[in-house]
Length: 292
Image: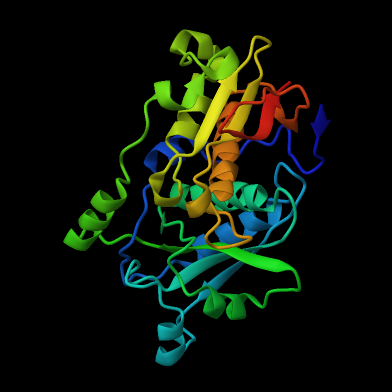
């Protein structure tokens, strides 16, 4: 079983990851109140501690303030009406390589959960922003991709009708039941709470995760040895429309992040590895295995 060197094995966050996962929502309308310098420094300091993701790739992040930009530049960074009032954005870039999307998703979700713990709002954007304009602000290196960004700021006090309609259209609050995403050996029978045992909360954290168009493409199978195998149920046309940027592979990184953070928070053993004995299942793409 191959383990990648970039994974931290024992680091416990200074915030409650499971609570942040349950609290986080996609915020599309932001207050005019600026993000305090102390909070921004907290985020930047946290980014410095991240290192690489489960596959050993280290993404690059930048916090972009829009205030110094003129109106023409700001219009050029438009997000097609999805985001209102945001003046701070987190940009995530990564070198194109196997596992890059998963590692970007893993590390960026950690930053988003940190922001949530600080009382700040965020919203994953993978396909609804002017990528080339943001890429210029990121000064991409050769071979780098800009798979995702997120606004960062204080949410407005009241949810607007436009926000409610967007969330309704995206079915943002709806999550698949356990019976559709978690399975026992062989991947046929749904995994029960009793079979999940101590890993109930890490699995629930995966179920609650955000995903592109809320498709929730993760599937997890627990085998007889107690290992958890993560698979992608890919919607190929949707996932490959942006070429090398695979939104559903970003989702896999988010799932890996949620599972790992909550497992470590609850002192449960294990890490993400590539397991050559993982089951081969029709219609599912193997990603990684959580095991001791």
